[in-house]
Image (cartoon, rainbow, N blue to C red):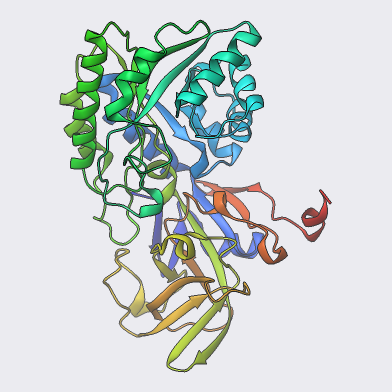
Length: 425
């Protein structure tokens, strides 16, 4: 559930009309709902409460420091994948003891910075990284803590570019050699190998892949324990799917928890989860305004002021985002956001941006109400991997970001200017 709804013929975020925000801030603009962010975080925390799980928000999904602070104030930890994300986590007020550091290519400086601030743990991706972290920790006179990232070799049935738990991915070590890695590095002096971690992919729309992966991992932990290794925690990763195409596309996290808690209850180790998309995805939309219309052969094009530099997911992953006018005519006010529901009066269009690439699009062959120049469109479920993956391609300033809180809204990132584009040059 989110707090974007049509009311009196127009789209509201909580109690603020989207049109009002666009008038005050311009377009393209990302809008986030505070109530939705908090609701989704609490839903995860409550769902896994029987396990007393630590929830670490995946900053890479949507890293605005104001959103991070909001979640930290709720008690959330942080999952980081770079030195920049660690910096954000610290500036957001997150306790280092609630920060987990993932990623296959951590630099020496990034590792040293994380050790010095006292993070909870590194997710360890390879034997070479284990040796390097041990070396760096020794040089700093400190002890680092790590969890071995293990690929359970489970197919999450998601996009090939976001499948991360198979043997062929660049992440982690194969489950069939995990025990050997623990044995090989049993007696390190400056790195305590004390946990295991998995992340099978994202977005994952089925529960069974998680069940299968957790069953494999708990058997591995049992074997490691019998071999004399003390496993202090098990990090389940994240990747829970959200509703891009239909309101019933994804299972609520409560259903995932119901299936997983019986497999993990009363275990002698702590549990962590690393959601990102589930918290931020449906909590954000992208507002964009229609610039022009044109025809090309048999196709009708709606050209908008947001492009692949603002939202690359459709181009990169072939992803679907529900798009609808913020003020549709009376017969086309949607009762729910559903990929299969066509407008009562509309047309089939290509929604494209201004970038000089044929691959610059937000939607292909999409049924939409008829639009005209100046109409405002909302691109839904854009909170995760929307602004976070945006760029200055074609020397376009990045969009503004706005956080709505009830009847109030605040710009939490100013729209970039042309001067910003060359400030570092």
